[in-house]
Image (cartoon, rainbow, N blue to C red; front, side):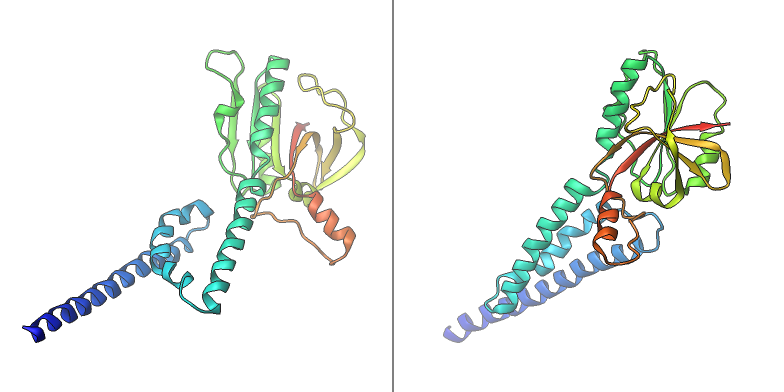
Length: 255
């Protein structure tokens, strides 16, 4: 009886270990295969990784609480990385979109006129922030062009055949890289009256008949698909790169 009472728990423990290993293999596969498949797609966003967090935590959770220096280093790294990523995705990443839409909504109520609103290198604009109920009389047409270069944006924005103004929201890094600052400021844009201190006039190389009038800028705003470029690691270059972490809203005029 004593031998049998020892033998049964040993078999149970060995079976439990085998099951645990198999579950670990399944969880690791549930993490690796989706990530590998996601790398094949051109459009990628961090939120696509949310489903793989559970298998990753299941496989790695015990590594953080084992005795030794390595576990403490892993736990500290995990805490620091979570704080940094929370700031990055909670404060910086695409953060200019909500205040930009609220700004547009307020101006809609003031001007009493609709518009075309185009965004590039940003996520889909949440329509509820425009606060434009159906039947309000303000036709708002929104267009999310995804990762579209400036020249395609110009072709799209200049293709409208109505009298509604066309606004373009783009990262500040895109402004600095592709637009050429002109002399003076934009004149009164009619339906969208802009402050002279903000309404700088920009042109585009190869499109002399196109004018960009900056309506407002919203900071911070970081787009990972169009990061600022630093040519030299100097204070002025770093400051210039930080200044580009914004979302610019332009009124585009085509002639």
